[in-house]
Image (cartoon, rainbow over all chains, first blue to last red; front, side, top):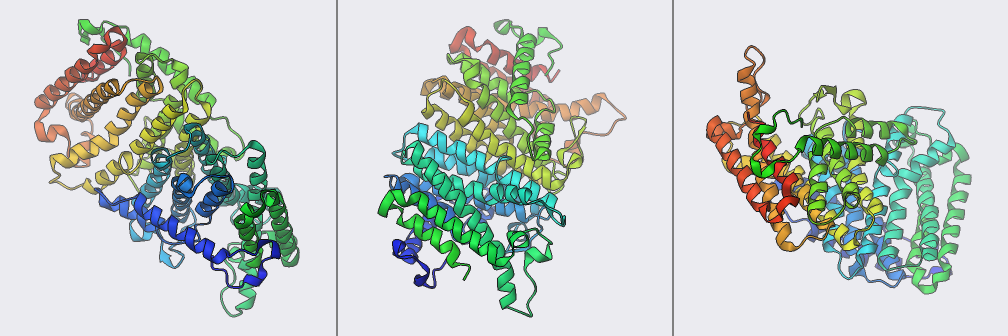
Length: 307
Length: 307
C-alpha cells in the first residue's frame, strides 16, 4: 500500500498517510516476528513464519491499531490483537491456495506455502496460525479488562468461521464457473470473505479501548463501507489494469469467469459506487474529529487506487 | 466407552461409572446438537455437524465437566467449553483424515468428511469448527468471570497449535515408515497429539470453577498420567486385539510400521507401566475425596480396557 500521489486526498484528510502506514507497518512486522520464535519441531514454525512474514499491506492490523487509538487506547493494548488478525488472514490465504481449493502456486510473487513445504504441513500451518491467534490475544494482551478480550475473541471467531471467511469461501467455490450468479450471492461472498475480517479489525481495536456501543456501530458502518469499496476497486483494477496493459493476459476474474461488480454495473458505475461508499465511510467517522484522520485517509486511499 | 464389567474397579472407586458417563454423554450430545444450527450456506454447517455429531466417547467434554464440578462449579458453567473441546478434537480428526495427511476413508465405520463432501469443504469444515470453538466459549459461557475465560482460551489455543496437536501431528507424519524413532520422539508425539488436549480438558473445567493453582497442578499431573496411560493401552490393544482375532488383518500400527510403546517395552511391561500411571493419576486426586470419584473411575477404566 504505497501512496504515490498525495493529491488524491481531500483537504479534510491532509494527513501524511505514507509515513503513518510505514510506521505502523514496521511496528506490526516487528511484533509478528517476535510473536512466533522457531522451536522444535522447527518445520511447522518455519512454515507458519514463511507465510506470516511474507509481506503484504498489513491493512487489518493497522485498522485495529488505528481504532484503538481513536477510541482512547494505546498501540500496545492492541498489538497482540493486530497480530492475531494477520495470523487469521494468513491462515485463510494458506488454505485458500491449497490444491483442493484455488490451487495457486504463487502468492505475491513467492511460492505458496504448500509448494515450499507440502500440503500436509500447509494445512497444519494454517491450523497452527488460527489456534495461535486466539492464544496470542489471550496471553499477550496487557492493560485491557478481560471482558473486553472475551468480546474481541468472540468477534474474531465469528469473522473467521462459517458465519464469516469460511462461509464466504464455500459459496465462492460453488460459484466458480457458474455464469448466472445473483447479485445477492456476490454480496454474500464479499461480505463474508473480505468484509467480515475487515469489520472485526476495525471494531476489535475500539472494543479493546472501551468504545461506547454507539461508537462501535459507527465504526462498523465505516468498516462495511470501506470493505465493499475495497472489493469493488479490486474488481475494477483487475479489468482496467488489463486494458492498460494490452497484449498481456486478461484479468484473472475474467479468466475464471468470475462474477464481479463491474460485470453487474460496468466500470464507470462501479467506480461511482466505490466513491460513494468511501464518502459514506468518511461521514460515519467525522464525529471523531482529528482522531479519525487515519481512518479517513485510509478510506480515501481506496478510491485513489482506481486512478 | 461402555463399561462391561464393574469388577475391574477398585473399592476406592465404587461408583456407577456407566450411568455417570451415559448421563454426561447425553448432556454433551444435546449441547453439541444445539450449538450449531444449519443456516445458509447449508453445506458447510452440514459438513461440520456430520463429523461433530458422529458419536465417540466424548471423553474430553466429560473430563471438563467432571473437573468443573470437582472444583465447585456447575455443569452449565463448563458446557460451552466442553463442546469447544469436542469441536477442536473433531477438527483435528477431519484434517488428519485428509488425503494429504493420513488419507483415511473411514472413521468409526462412517465415511470420513472429505469422502462425503469433498476435500475443500472438509478443510473449511475443520477451520470453521476451530474458529467456532473459541467463539462458542466467548459467547455462550454464563456465570464465569471473564478472566477465567481468557485463561481457558489461552490453554485451548496452546493445546491445539504448534505447541500441541499440530506440533505432534507434524512429528508423527515425519516418523511414518521411519524405523529408528527414538523413545523421546514417541513421547513428544503422544504428549502433543493426545495428552495436550486431554490436559486442557481436565484443567479448563477446574479453571472455570476457580480452582487454586495447587489444585490445577494436581489435576495437570492427573491428566498427564491418564493421557500417557490411555495411549499405551491404545497401542497394546492394537496388538492384543489382533492376536485374539487370528486370521484377521494385523493391527494398523504394525501395518504402518509405527513405533509404539509395546515396540519399546513389550506388551507385559507396557501394561505394567499403564497400570502404574493410573495409580499415580488416582493418587494425585485422592485429596479431593468423594468429589474425585468420577476422575478415579475414569482412570481405572483406562486399564480395565487392557483386559
